[in-house]
Amino acid sequence: MSTEPTWSLDGAAQRLPAYAAQWLPKGASLVQRDKIHLLAGLMPHTLERRGIVVVSGPAGSGKTTTVAAVVGVAPVRAVYVALPPKTRDKMLWENLAGAIGATAVGTQRQLQDAVQAQLATQPTMLVVDEAQNVGLEALKALRWLTGQLTCPFAMVLSGIDLNQALGKEPMLASRVSARVLLRSPRFGDLLPELRSFHPVLDQVARTNPALLGRVDSAYAHGSWRAWSLLIDQLNAFGYTTLNEESAADAIELIAGSRPW
Image (tube, rainbow, N blue to C red):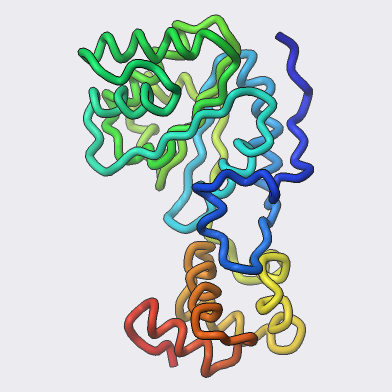
Protein backbone atom coordinates (compact mmCIF):
# COMPACT_ATOMS: atom_id res chain seq x y z
CA MET A 1 0.00 0.00 0.00
CA SER A 2 1.31 3.45 -0.86
CA THR A 3 1.03 6.22 1.70
CA GLU A 4 0.96 9.95 1.37
CA PRO A 5 4.33 11.65 2.00
CA THR A 6 2.76 13.64 4.83
CA TRP A 7 -0.47 13.49 6.80
CA SER A 8 -2.43 16.70 6.39
CA LEU A 9 -3.31 18.47 9.61
CA ASP A 10 -6.02 20.55 7.92
CA GLY A 11 -9.12 20.29 10.06
CA ALA A 12 -7.25 18.67 12.95
CA ALA A 13 -9.12 20.76 15.51
CA GLN A 14 -12.50 19.58 14.22
CA ARG A 15 -11.36 15.95 14.07
CA LEU A 16 -9.77 15.79 17.52
CA PRO A 17 -10.85 12.52 19.18
CA ALA A 18 -13.31 12.82 22.06
CA TYR A 19 -10.82 11.55 24.67
CA ALA A 20 -8.64 14.59 23.98
CA ALA A 21 -11.31 17.14 23.06
CA GLN A 22 -12.93 16.74 26.48
CA TRP A 23 -9.86 18.30 28.09
CA LEU A 24 -10.04 21.46 25.98
CA PRO A 25 -11.78 24.21 27.98
CA LYS A 26 -14.83 25.91 26.49
CA GLY A 27 -13.68 28.46 23.92
CA ALA A 28 -10.18 26.98 23.62
CA SER A 29 -8.50 26.09 20.34
CA LEU A 30 -6.11 23.32 19.40
CA VAL A 31 -2.64 24.83 19.20
CA GLN A 32 -0.78 23.12 16.37
CA ARG A 33 2.63 23.02 18.01
CA ASP A 34 5.76 22.00 16.12
CA LYS A 35 5.73 18.57 17.75
CA ILE A 36 2.33 17.78 16.23
CA HIS A 37 3.72 18.47 12.76
CA LEU A 38 6.82 16.44 13.57
CA LEU A 39 4.80 13.40 14.65
CA ALA A 40 2.52 13.61 11.61
CA GLY A 41 5.54 13.82 9.34
CA LEU A 42 7.05 10.69 10.90
CA MET A 43 4.00 8.50 10.37
CA PRO A 44 4.26 7.51 6.66
CA HIS A 45 7.81 6.18 7.00
CA THR A 46 7.05 4.57 10.36
CA LEU A 47 4.09 2.72 8.86
CA GLU A 48 6.16 1.42 5.98
CA ARG A 49 8.92 0.25 8.32
CA ARG A 50 6.53 -1.11 10.98
CA GLY A 51 8.34 1.02 13.50
CA ILE A 52 7.91 2.50 16.95
CA VAL A 53 7.77 6.21 17.79
CA VAL A 54 8.14 7.33 21.40
CA VAL A 55 6.42 10.51 22.59
CA SER A 56 7.95 11.45 25.94
CA GLY A 57 7.73 14.40 28.29
CA PRO A 58 6.79 15.55 31.77
CA ALA A 59 3.20 15.55 33.03
CA GLY A 60 1.10 18.28 31.42
CA SER A 61 3.49 18.88 28.51
CA GLY A 62 0.85 18.08 25.87
CA LYS A 63 1.64 14.45 24.98
CA THR A 64 -1.95 13.23 24.75
CA THR A 65 -3.09 16.22 22.70
CA THR A 66 -0.07 15.94 20.39
CA VAL A 67 -0.80 12.31 19.65
CA ALA A 68 -4.57 12.85 19.46
CA ALA A 69 -4.21 15.58 16.83
CA VAL A 70 -2.40 13.11 14.58
CA VAL A 71 -4.82 10.27 15.37
CA GLY A 72 -7.68 12.52 14.27
CA VAL A 73 -6.27 13.06 10.77
CA ALA A 74 -4.83 9.56 10.27
CA PRO A 75 -5.63 8.20 6.77
CA VAL A 76 -5.34 4.66 8.20
CA ARG A 77 -7.07 2.89 11.07
CA ALA A 78 -6.00 4.56 14.32
CA VAL A 79 -6.40 2.66 17.59
CA TYR A 80 -5.93 4.39 20.95
CA VAL A 81 -5.55 2.68 24.31
CA ALA A 82 -4.67 4.35 27.63
CA LEU A 83 -3.15 2.04 30.21
CA PRO A 84 -4.02 2.26 33.92
CA PRO A 85 -1.30 2.25 36.61
CA LYS A 86 0.39 -1.07 37.36
CA THR A 87 -0.78 -2.69 34.14
CA ARG A 88 0.37 -6.31 34.17
CA ASP A 89 1.47 -8.24 31.09
CA LYS A 90 -1.84 -10.01 30.43
CA MET A 91 -3.87 -6.88 31.26
CA LEU A 92 -1.89 -5.04 28.57
CA TRP A 93 -2.99 -7.52 25.92
CA GLU A 94 -6.58 -7.51 27.18
CA ASN A 95 -6.64 -3.73 26.79
CA LEU A 96 -5.15 -3.92 23.31
CA ALA A 97 -7.53 -6.67 22.20
CA GLY A 98 -10.54 -4.72 23.43
CA ALA A 99 -9.38 -1.52 21.71
CA ILE A 100 -8.95 -3.10 18.27
CA GLY A 101 -12.01 -5.35 18.41
CA ALA A 102 -10.20 -8.65 18.85
CA THR A 103 -11.29 -11.44 21.20
CA ALA A 104 -10.33 -10.19 24.68
CA VAL A 105 -10.40 -13.51 26.55
CA GLY A 106 -7.98 -16.39 26.86
CA THR A 107 -4.36 -16.88 27.85
CA GLN A 108 -1.80 -14.16 27.24
CA ARG A 109 -0.52 -16.01 24.18
CA GLN A 110 -4.05 -16.34 22.80
CA LEU A 111 -4.58 -12.62 23.34
CA GLN A 112 -1.30 -11.83 21.58
CA ASP A 113 -2.30 -13.99 18.63
CA ALA A 114 -5.74 -12.35 18.48
CA VAL A 115 -4.20 -8.87 18.48
CA GLN A 116 -1.70 -9.85 15.80
CA ALA A 117 -4.43 -11.35 13.60
CA GLN A 118 -6.59 -8.24 13.88
CA LEU A 119 -3.71 -5.86 13.14
CA ALA A 120 -2.82 -7.91 10.05
CA THR A 121 -6.14 -7.02 8.40
CA GLN A 122 -5.36 -3.39 7.53
CA PRO A 123 -2.74 -0.63 8.00
CA THR A 124 -2.89 0.60 11.58
CA MET A 125 -1.51 3.33 13.81
CA LEU A 126 -1.57 1.92 17.34
CA VAL A 127 -1.25 4.45 20.16
CA VAL A 128 -0.39 3.18 23.64
CA ASP A 129 -0.84 6.14 25.99
CA GLU A 130 0.36 6.25 29.61
CA ALA A 131 2.97 3.67 28.59
CA GLN A 132 4.99 4.51 31.71
CA ASN A 133 2.41 2.38 33.56
CA VAL A 134 3.75 -0.78 31.91
CA GLY A 135 6.87 -2.69 32.94
CA LEU A 136 9.79 -3.08 30.57
CA GLU A 137 9.00 -6.77 30.03
CA ALA A 138 5.53 -5.88 28.77
CA LEU A 139 6.98 -3.18 26.52
CA LYS A 140 9.39 -5.73 25.07
CA ALA A 141 6.38 -7.94 24.33
CA LEU A 142 4.84 -5.04 22.44
CA ARG A 143 8.02 -4.80 20.40
CA TRP A 144 7.34 -8.39 19.33
CA LEU A 145 4.36 -7.14 17.33
CA THR A 146 6.52 -5.06 15.02
CA GLY A 147 8.41 -8.17 13.93
CA GLN A 148 5.30 -10.27 13.29
CA LEU A 149 3.31 -8.04 10.96
CA THR A 150 3.70 -7.59 7.23
CA CYS A 151 0.88 -5.05 6.91
CA PRO A 152 1.87 -1.36 7.34
CA PHE A 153 1.95 -0.70 11.07
CA ALA A 154 3.11 2.09 13.36
CA MET A 155 3.19 1.98 17.15
CA VAL A 156 3.27 5.19 19.17
CA LEU A 157 4.29 4.78 22.81
CA SER A 158 3.43 7.89 24.81
CA GLY A 159 4.24 8.42 28.46
CA ILE A 160 5.74 10.52 31.22
CA ASP A 161 9.54 10.59 30.87
CA LEU A 162 9.29 7.41 28.80
CA ASN A 163 12.47 8.15 26.90
CA GLN A 164 14.54 7.91 30.07
CA ALA A 165 12.93 4.58 31.00
CA LEU A 166 13.63 3.10 27.58
CA GLY A 167 17.27 4.11 27.91
CA LYS A 168 17.61 1.39 30.56
CA GLU A 169 16.63 -1.33 28.08
CA PRO A 170 18.91 -1.25 25.01
CA MET A 171 17.11 -4.16 23.31
CA LEU A 172 13.87 -2.17 23.29
CA ALA A 173 15.44 1.22 22.65
CA SER A 174 17.15 -0.11 19.53
CA ARG A 175 13.74 -0.80 17.96
CA VAL A 176 12.55 2.79 18.41
CA SER A 177 12.71 4.53 15.05
CA ALA A 178 12.10 8.07 16.32
CA ARG A 179 11.55 10.04 19.51
CA VAL A 180 9.34 13.10 19.91
CA LEU A 181 10.47 14.80 23.11
CA LEU A 182 8.23 17.38 24.75
CA ARG A 183 9.45 19.76 27.41
CA SER A 184 7.85 22.35 29.63
CA PRO A 185 8.57 25.50 27.62
CA ARG A 186 10.08 28.73 28.85
CA PHE A 187 7.46 31.42 29.26
CA GLY A 188 8.77 33.48 26.36
CA ASP A 189 8.21 30.53 24.03
CA LEU A 190 4.87 29.69 25.63
CA LEU A 191 3.31 33.16 25.36
CA PRO A 192 2.39 33.13 21.64
CA GLU A 193 0.89 29.66 22.04
CA LEU A 194 -1.22 30.82 25.00
CA ARG A 195 -2.56 33.62 22.82
CA SER A 196 -3.72 31.04 20.26
CA PHE A 197 -5.12 28.77 22.96
CA HIS A 198 -7.91 30.93 24.39
CA PRO A 199 -9.35 34.45 23.80
CA VAL A 200 -9.07 35.36 27.49
CA LEU A 201 -5.33 34.63 27.44
CA ASP A 202 -4.94 36.51 24.16
CA GLN A 203 -6.61 39.56 25.69
CA VAL A 204 -4.31 39.53 28.73
CA ALA A 205 -1.24 38.93 26.55
CA ARG A 206 -2.01 42.14 24.67
CA THR A 207 -2.69 44.28 27.76
CA ASN A 208 -0.78 42.74 30.66
CA PRO A 209 1.59 39.91 29.59
CA ALA A 210 3.45 40.21 32.88
CA LEU A 211 0.39 38.79 34.65
CA LEU A 212 0.54 35.65 32.51
CA GLY A 213 4.21 35.37 33.44
CA ARG A 214 3.34 35.57 37.13
CA VAL A 215 0.66 32.90 36.75
CA ASP A 216 3.08 30.60 34.96
CA SER A 217 5.83 31.17 37.51
CA ALA A 218 3.62 30.72 40.58
CA TYR A 219 1.32 28.00 39.31
CA ALA A 220 1.43 26.55 35.78
CA HIS A 221 5.20 26.11 35.25
CA GLY A 222 4.72 25.59 31.52
CA SER A 223 2.08 22.87 31.95
CA TRP A 224 -0.71 22.85 29.36
CA ARG A 225 -2.86 20.84 31.72
CA ALA A 226 -2.49 23.53 34.38
CA TRP A 227 -3.46 26.29 31.95
CA SER A 228 -6.49 24.25 30.84
CA LEU A 229 -7.62 23.84 34.45
CA LEU A 230 -7.25 27.56 35.03
CA ILE A 231 -9.47 28.40 32.06
CA ASP A 232 -11.99 25.78 33.20
CA GLN A 233 -12.28 27.47 36.59
CA LEU A 234 -12.65 30.90 35.02
CA ASN A 235 -15.44 29.54 32.83
CA ALA A 236 -17.13 27.81 35.77
CA PHE A 237 -17.40 31.03 37.75
CA GLY A 238 -18.33 33.25 34.83
CA TYR A 239 -15.11 35.27 34.69
CA THR A 240 -14.69 36.81 31.24
CA THR A 241 -11.25 38.22 31.92
CA LEU A 242 -8.11 37.30 33.79
CA ASN A 243 -6.79 39.74 36.38
CA GLU A 244 -4.86 39.32 39.61
CA GLU A 245 -7.99 38.62 41.63
CA SER A 246 -9.65 36.15 39.25
CA ALA A 247 -6.34 34.38 38.67
CA ALA A 248 -5.72 34.03 42.41
CA ASP A 249 -9.29 32.78 42.98
CA ALA A 250 -8.99 30.15 40.26
CA ILE A 251 -5.56 28.98 41.35
CA GLU A 252 -6.71 28.67 44.96
CA LEU A 253 -9.55 26.40 43.88
CA ILE A 254 -7.14 24.20 41.89
CA ALA A 255 -4.03 24.19 44.05
CA GLY A 256 -5.47 24.83 47.52
CA SER A 257 -3.58 28.04 48.21
CA ARG A 258 -3.43 31.55 46.83
CA PRO A 259 -0.38 32.35 44.70
CA TRP A 260 -0.04 35.93 46.01
